Image 1 (tube, rainbow, N blue to C red):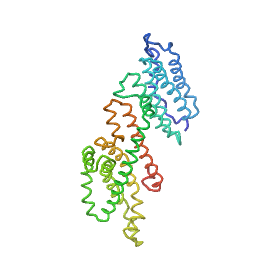
Image 2 (image 1 turned 90 degrees about the vertical axis):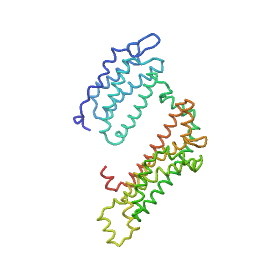
Image 3 (image 1 turned 135 degrees about the horizontal axis):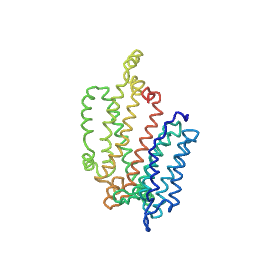
Image 4 (image 1 turned 120 degrees about the vertical axis):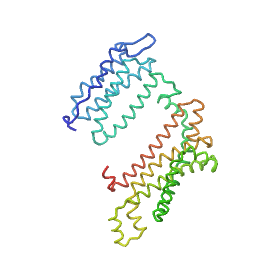
Length: 367
């Protein structure tokens, strides 16, 4: 990217110039000035040097790397001071605010880049959120019962790794996978049947809207009463939650073929099933993947909520409800993190499969 095409940097990160006149931290001996903390002073000077030298960078990517070094120094200083038992002062918070604004410049530069550098932007944004979470919760003294820092959650991962793995196996590998396959498969099959017999579609669509309005906390205890406390009741909840989204998306996709394409298939003498396999289902692939992606998160939510109403002594929902009662919020957040990572991984895998399978589709080429 040419240097002359870059927008000038906004002046807001320079708010950190106010930081040296304010105390950097407080400790047992009172407020500390920047000159009394060599680590904090070195970090501030490094960040300011990165801002001054950015104009000499030969490219936008080089400028982003230079500014990122300054941001990293700013985020490291509070963690180092907190590790020494000091409480961040007003000057340190101003410095951190300026560095966060500077991070916005880095993310904009990476968003305009090509290749792997562009993918680094979302990763840096997520890492910055985690670091800010750690700094703010520890620096402001937020009680762990309200919001534990990420460090405590990572420690809970290590301490309760075996329990979290058992919960993952029970909830995801046993309940979610089975319920997801049954719900999506049934929704797809019924959509094909409703497409073949149109009056079924007119009758099932209102039922789909009705079922979508039923809260999962309403159907979960009923399914537990019907199918027991094991995975069958969780799979039943997942089937109810995933059946109609899959059916509706499949029906919408089957109607996506253009009339001229259907007329061409008729001119070739193709019947209903041949037209369905060779034309209508390929055209419906974006809708099918849309239903699969929506259901990947709905299935996980449904299984966890259903476990609140009865489950063997294992499972993510069981772990959350039990550890909340024990005030072990770090374990609760660790379980939530496992669920979030699992849902993101499932969604990402389906999105990647969609990219590979439907790269030829006109709707995908327009993205």
